Image (cartoon, rainbow, N blue to C red):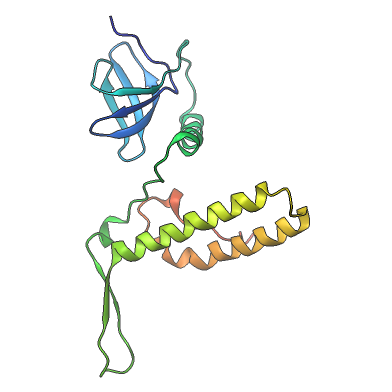
Length: 176
């Protein structure tokens, strides 16, 4: 008889990658995978247990599961977040056209540009974490630096149209 894993168990599936079990029945696991999103798999499917969670299965809200999942994946995963590009831009090209028509255009795959935007966002997040965790900087200086980072995010909101998922877009200062 197979052992049933509890909610919060981390697994790695050969097709779907790393994920966290978010719901359980005697026959199925609902697993939120980093690359593939929510999938159901049989409890006897081929996967590797990274960390098993024992105990009773409790019902929790989807919001709580999603929030916990993000925290677990950020804490334990060595892979960076998968950020999909909006479908309408997949395979597209960005053209930089100089005003002077005697000069040639520069064409860049949109996915290459998007990847650089995502890397910039990730580096801003790391810098933000390092500032907030610093024992050397005083609180007022941390606040000042945080405001600059927030303004950087705001400047990058122009590129939100490239993101498939709204939850992964840039957010600047609120107008409230």
